[in-house]
Length: 264
Ligand code: SF4
Picture 1 (cartoon, rainbow, N blue to C red):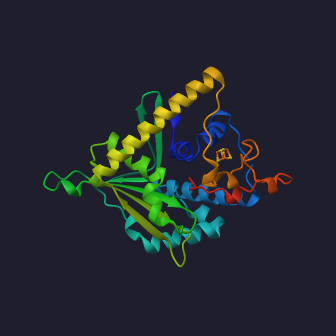
Picture 2 (cartoon, protein in one colour):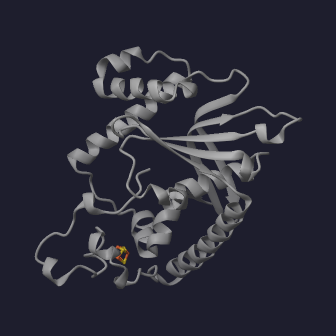
């Protein structure tokens, strides 16, 4: 059984050959020091929020990191309700959900999941909130966040593995580093979106199964994205795929910062 995350879906949809090289051939590039430092800070913030949810002391961490302390204070100021929870609500950080579809195991890890209690008199009061921390500013393409596979898969998995119907589920991204204060983007879910996600997931899986079988049986490579999309110009597999610009062939065309990606 193959584990599938939102990152797998995103790359598979973007370019099947990129999927093959990244996940089947396990080809990766080392991160630049700047990226490493940003990634580490992002991980530290997630750990901080997790530790806080577990009721463990976070003061020693905040005392050691002015940046984490600034972000924490900003969040407390902007969204105090997130940190003064309803005692009747169930909440858990780093909550893991899985869903088996055919030979694939879909996995999502929610930064924070809040489930409001069931209320027989008012079904709409029963709701689930998915919270996701992003330790970078709100991107300019925020209107497309509902199309990102992280949004779609996380909403889909929760609706499929719980009693919550799509209209009772929301997804909120918090962009901690936005100026002058953290900003959030709230995404509602509908039955129509749920059905569309299901169709798209099944279509991607059908293709993936075909490509994996052909690759295993005849070493047939996964299809490449059309060169006309322009994606190859910024892809670190351009040399392996023979898709680099003629002008670039004398120089290494590897620039991770230029790879279009929605960070995990
Ligand atoms: S260079 Fe182009 S075809 Fe090759 S993996 Fe990257 S995007 Fe896909």
